[in-house]
Length: 125
Image (tube, rainbow, N blue to C red; front, side):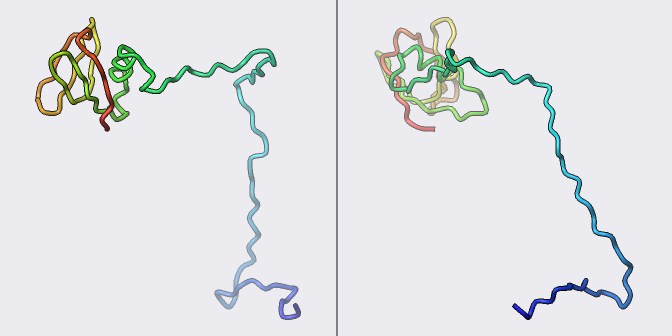
């Protein structure tokens, strides 16, 4: 590769240019944390939270799960089947064995007793 010059020249923008020194980089070389690192013992196992699929949950677990979802997560639309009729909507609250459902077809929420619920199925978001 004879066409590459060994001594490289700086590009010329003006006829005379001042000599600039190359900037030096100062990077982080040391990291210190106030948190103490705890090493788990070989005999102890790490605790994994017990998560279930919605299809494996009981009715009360489903109602508590859908009622306790944070507001920043999308709520799942459910089909709640009772002894008399079927509701399609969002489970909002569960207090004192009463379930509050925001039904899609009505403007006001519907409150039904928990013992009347026969099945809860997820329809979508």
